[in-house]
Every structure is written in C-alpha cells, then in structure tokens.
Image 1 (cartoon, rainbow, N blue to C red):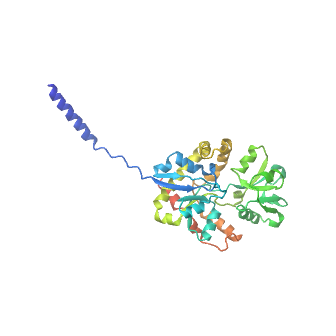
Image 2: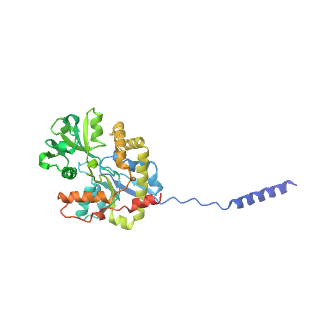
Image 3: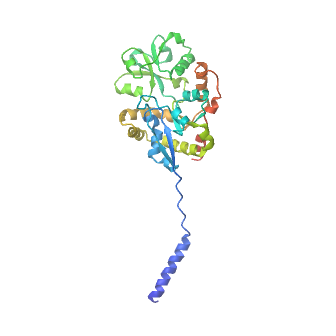
Length: 337
C-alpha cells in the first residue's frame, strides 16, 4: 500500500469516528444577568450570612442574578435606612424587615408580601445578671425591666400568657440600646438577641440568665425577605430564582457556620470574628429548627403575630394577614430540588 493510499485511509477513519460520536451538543446558554437589589434591615452581620453565602458561592449568579447589597443601618445624615421605603420606592426589589413591621405596613395600605424567612424562631430574649435570680417569667415580678418598643408587644404577650399582672413589674421603655443599663444597675432586665447582646455579655465575662420568649410560645419573624405584590404578579420567575438561590445560601450557612461568620466580616470590618462565630452557632436553631427547612414560614406564626398586634392595639383593626405572605416560592424551591 502506497503512502497516498494510507493518507486516504486515515482520513476515512477520522470521518467515520467523528460520525459515530454524533454532533457536538451546543453549550447551554448562561441565563441573562439581571441586577437585583436587596436592602438589609441593619448593618451587615451574621443575621444576613445566608445572603452573603449565596453571593460568594455563586448561587445567585447561577440563577442569572447580579445581587447588589447597598449600605444599610444609618445614612450619612443619621437617618435610618428603611428597607420598606426602599422597596416601595423601587430602589430595591427585595428587602428585609420584621414581621410586625410588615403587618403594620399592610395595615397602612402598603402592598408588601413576605416570600421567605431567615430566622424561623425569634432571637429575642430577656437578659439579666445571674445574681438577680431571674430564670423564669414569674421571677420578673418586682423587678425593673427595660424593653425596646419593638419587643414590647411580645413581652406583654408573655406576661399575659403566664398570668402575670403587668402592674406587678416595673416595665419601662428602653432608651439606651446598649447593655449599660443592665451593668450599671439601672435595669434588672433588658431585651436582647441571643446572637448579639448575649454573646457580648458572655465574652465580657458576665454570668447571665436568659428567658427566651419563643420557649414560651411567644414567637414572631424578625427578618423576613419581602417584595411587592406587583413584583410577585408581574415577575414571579425573578422571585422564584431569588428565593431558590437564597435557600441554598441558608443551607450553606447551616452546613458551615464558621465560614459564614467569616463572610460577615467581609461586609463589615468592624465585626469581631470570634463573636460572629459564637453568634452563628447560636443562630443555627433559629435558621433551621427541628421539623422545618431553611426559609420556611408557618401560618401559625403569622396568625400569632397578627393577634398580638391587634390585641394590644398596635394595629387598630384586624387585617387579612394571610395576604402579607406567600409560601409558594419556598414550596416550589424544595419541590424542584
């Protein structure tokens, strides 16, 4: 066989092999990138670690979302940056707020809808120095209690549920947001988050007692992710993609809480890593309580929040609280996973 014949045989074999392999499938096109703004309810910390993880690990980008996290907390002029205002103005598609604030907004005619929750149990706890011996609600009687205005409805619901006469407790509106009133003796009890003030006090070496409100069935969502009903109606696919990616971020946080704490520092260099790690460990049961899944909301918790606000006159008249939230996007995210 001459060289020329060998060449044609080689070409024939290459063509035959290529045909056997079939045509090369075109690569799946990447989803178009959509800018999405989410307004946090407070300065960056572990509370928002699920969002930070979804950005870092590419869960949002895999859904074609370029998520922007603008400044939060207070603006340069000292005014509070309201996630509700930002979403209503269209400056953000999503925001984070408390369940009570969202219900108040609904009562005021603002068409906002919660699509998932970050913490499913409330981190609010009543904190006291151990030397006071306050370990259960009945021990509050005769003591001075400083409560922030947002905790007050839940605190009053706790007293009512335990049959405690509010007049038997010296309850005052809390004006100092720090732990100083507890430490200087001007208050026997203050409200705080188990992931924040409790961690701070323990790190400083104080021996403390806590009364977790949710342990007594007093619960409310502290950090809901919400949008407008108009966005839910006009662009449900955007909402679904955002919820799906955020759930993956929450799951990543539960799987690796220490890395999640480190992520918080990337967004706020004023944080202390060890405190964030400790807070993250305490947050795990809030993010992923037994019998649930990250992101879930329940009708029972929404009904309870609404009843507390109506009973205490925070909301003048009952509203259709079921329009304040939808579980369809979380349900679909888990159904398709």
